[in-house]
Length: 259
Image: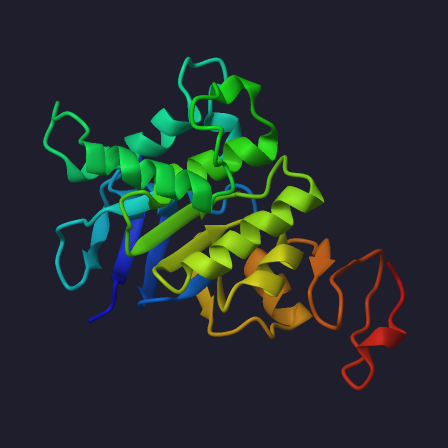
């Protein structure tokens, strides 16, 4: 039974469809990267999966049921108010709220789970630190800790590496690689180069969804799905920026040095 099954989804706002005929299957331990142009419907798809937006047509099934399970969600960095008076430990602890009755108190076991998650995120000793005093990488890992505290089977991340320097980005993806042994991951990003290097499969969302079962995609596939000029390709040993006309040399990708 698929962990997530989207069938003929049509979704949008005020009667206007942003997404049409979307079909997607996510199995246990999948690591799916979702790419697509701005306005193509990535955010709309996220809202539907999280249950924040009802489909206009079609259905979303979780383990064959419409009953939505706990989904770990890491929102975009820009949606977080760093001035909010909350500590690292409280942020992570709040991730357990979805498994508790409304207004129920956190138990000693809950607090121990938050401490274990903080240590796993590399935040040991920072549990009482206000989030406003954290670096970008530390805050992102605290939010990731909140997303995984309840041990979800599906983890959904929206532009997780935005505003992170290279060191923290590398550590973030190391954590995600470890977590992928425990849950399926859907990672939404505009960074095609990162997507192609980190995930197991990709889908392009641009009005509908086009699924590709691996990351060995061609320039033509990306151009067809983005329907716009391509800024970054991932073929060859390193992603590289494209200026002007581009030729792909499959027999020796390193010979193309227009960067």
